Image (tube, rainbow, N blue to C red; front, side, top):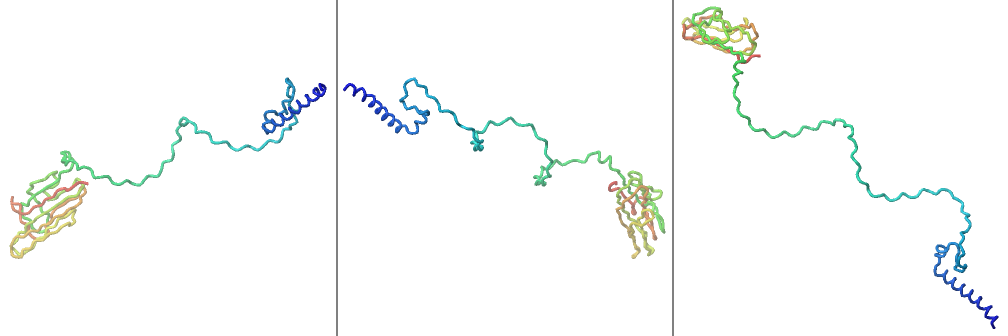
Length: 249
């Protein structure tokens, strides 16, 4: 009996240990390979060191590159770079709209310098003596002669400053004999205006005209009788000749 117990007890202990180990592997499943990679079953005696299996791995070929990772968070702005070179000049833009009218300015005054810089040329003279036939009328009763460009001895106005001039003349015909009278304004022996007076009723009549001419230095202006009789008037100035500069060149 004692001998039978000595034989059965080790057998029963082994069977119980095997049943416990099977139950352990059924519960853990794949964890056995993780928790006990080298086949530890718990049946090794205490103090036994686990030995890894011999290495038989061979390095394989290099694999394909993996997928790109996710974009990381945006970094902080960097410092500003240096200024770039200036660009090309662009095309001019279209004209802008006209602005509103400005305020009305203060009414100006004519400067005294204007009178001192603009040439002052003017004359006015009457006819004292009687004239007839074909001759230059010498208006010898001078009233105004600014600039002294009119010569009563010759009856001619001589230009010294180029510009635009105005001239007018009135010649009274001495009637009574049924004749007519012609009076021409001439520039350098060329007629520029004419006038006629007729003695239809044996009365006095006027021959008058006026011109605006451009003159150069040396040009002469005068009144020439072209037939008939011109009446003088002592100092009454029945016949007159006058002119003045409008503006200089």
